[in-house]
Amino acid sequence: MKAEADFNTPAILLRRIEYGDHDLILSVITPDRGKLALMAKAAKRSRRRFGGVLDLFAILELSCRAGRRGRLPLLAEASLCESLGTLRTDVAKTAYASYWAELVHFWGEEGQPQPALYALLHDVLTALDLDRLPARVLSLHFQLRFMGLAGLGPRLGACVGCQRSVEEVGAARLGFDPVRGGVICRDCERVPRLPVSRGAIKELAWVAGGDLVRVQRMRCSDEALRMGEALMETFVPFHLGREVRSLKFLRNLRESGALA
Image (cartoon, rainbow, N blue to C red; front, side, top):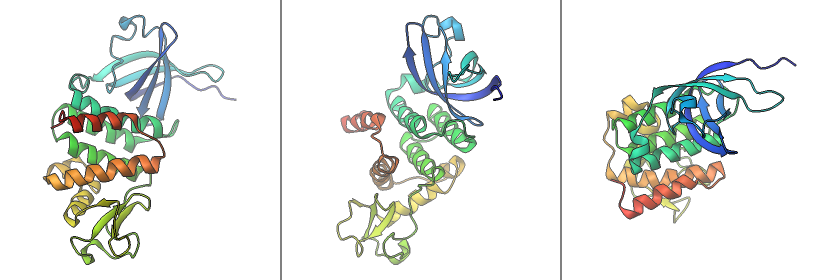
């Protein structure tokens, strides 16, 4: 069997796990290798070992040595490309970044090229750090695009029951069915679990269909943001089949009034 070669890669640091007294296991997302777990020897004992750059959400350039006999690849060197420091010092930004990173950590594919997912996370983290867009808008954009990349994007154009377009259904007669993954009219479900307006659906479809440059050209209404949060933060965990711990923290901050 051909031994795996050493490699260099850009990466975003998703998670750090202590291993023994001195080491760290890192979870990162990369464009060409997907999600990776790496062993960082002596990283916990001395910040000088890797220049003190192994911070959550940091964008890095890594040099790695292939692991032996099925062991994790070893991190040899790490250089900082973008620190994104406010994501670790602003509690609201930390909450959103942690939610996105947890989704990628648990559902990113290991060892498979994922350039679109890497670019999506890079773009929303950078925009959040620089305050280019409100965090709520960025989170809707990330969740909609993330689910689309997973092949589970919500169906926003027509009722999942009768197939009538959103335009054909009365403005006050729409809801969202997280089980079937899309808009549903009240003829098909009299009391929808998640009521949603036609205007909010249109705004969500706009956000789902474009990149951040396109999203920056629109102004999401408070109604669309509120309904979109309820919709996506129910839909995403349901279809991914796992409780998202960082989402609970994000919701607690929202309920306490700590999020703008």
